[in-house]
Every structure is written in structure tokens, then in C-alpha cells.
Image (cartoon, rainbow, N blue to C red; front, side, top):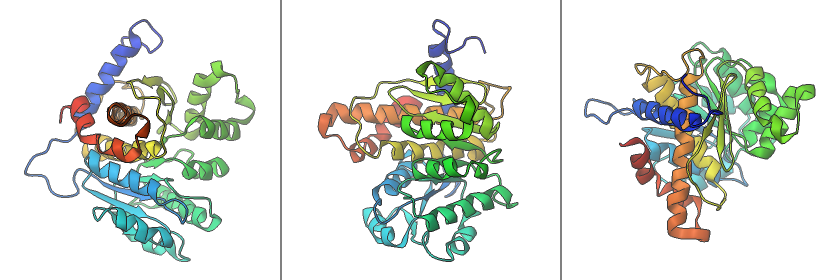
Length: 326
């Protein structure tokens, strides 16, 4: 790599390369493609208290460009999520006693799982989610399925990190500052340092502990995308408005980008970091971060303090076109 993020002008040059690689990953819209080739995404989340988050993630995945978006939620959340949009395929089974038997047959048809939006912390539901991750790790058909983990999904792996250590299919975590502190202090233990100047070391150390196919997106005023070997900024102007649901837009759009990077885009050769296995995941994470910031900027320019995440979702098309040209 001809420059590093810490060198003068290095960050902007690297980001330009990342944006170009993200553009290359986007599948062309041609008439010879069939439904499902651009991605089948599963969102695992949605509880009695939180029905909006899985909807925001799933509809964002669709708006970015996947073909089919499934939601696996608790029974009480199902009718609510269905009422939000007929575009989503909703499975209200997550809190059933035999939930895993309903979910497993669908998993083989999905390219990427987004785990955590609106999940809640019911022990029974978290046990089911742990079984899903374990199935994806060990099942021959599903073991290369990438995972995006956010929100209460991060709480689960903070408590049970062995679920995702060296996960073979590719793992992207999207913590905010508080969630990252909990994760890093729990997993790194004595090597964890709360000092602000240790943020970069903590990020890379955590990614390294979780395995070579792990990427961590630390959300903030400037998102940071970290692999075990690199930390990259995902700049782009957003706004000072922090309404609920923005992280769900990020995780859902990341699910689609990750699908394009690891499944639909296998014929695309990424050349940013040829020495690491997580290179395509880094590009996918960068693309989703830039898109989310751009949606925020555009929606805020229209709605100001009244901006909601639904206003950001309405800006996905224009933001995507401006950044990726399609």
C-alpha cells in the first residue's frame, strides 16, 4: 500500500481506493440476472419492545439492492413488522420452543445474517440465537455464511465470545463506543486500556482475538473500520443529529454490501490489502459506513432537527447513486 492512514494525505488516498473498490463490488443491473443473485439477507431480531429496529435493517438491505430480505422475530413483533411493509418476509418464530427447527431450513437459502437489531435480552431468545450461530459455524452447507452483529447481538457475544472466535464465514461487528468498551474490556481483559490514545490498539487487538476474518466497525463521528492488521477511517460528512435507528440502517446496508463482497462478487479481485483475508469485508464495511453518513447528511439538510431514520432511508437511492454511480 503506497500510503497509510496516518501519513499526510494517506487517509484520503486510501479512502479513494476503498470507495473505488466498493463501486466495483456493486453488481450491474442486467436483464440476464434472476431474483436472489443480488442477495438474500436474513435479519435476526425483533421483540415485544423493539419492532422498528429489524424493520429498519431489513428495509435498508432491500433499498441498497439485495433482492430478498427476511426477518426472524418474536411472535408478538411479527404482525407489527408485517404491517410496516409487505416487501419483507417475516418469520415470527424466534421465541418459540422449537424455533431452531423452523429457522434452519431457511438459513441455507440466505447469503448473510444480520444479528441483533431489536433482539432484546430474553435468555430463551438469546439461546436460540446462539444455536443459530453455532449451526452456521458447524453445518457444512451454512458454515461460510457471513454474519453482521449489532446491538443486543453484541451483548450475546460479550457474554459468550467463543460463539464467534475464528468464525469461518466472515464476521463484522458494529459497536458504538459503549458497546465497544464492554466488548473489549470483557474479551481483552488485562490487555484492555480505557485510555483514549489506546483506541487503535484496542480495536486491532479485539479483531485479532476474534480471528483473521473479523472486521470491527466502531461507530462515531468518524467511523473506524478495523481488521486484525489495519484501521481505516470512513469519513464523509453526516450531521449532529443522532436519532434512533441509524445503526440499523448501517447494519442492514452492510448485510447487502457483505453479500456482494463475499458471494455475488467472487469474480471481483480486491487489491487494497492482498495480505489479509478480510480485505473484501473491509471494503464492504467502508461502503456501508459512507452510505449511512451520506444518507444522514442529505436527510438532515431537508429535515434538520426533525430528521428521523425513515427520512434517511428515503435518501438511500440518491446517496447510493452519488457515491457508487449506480
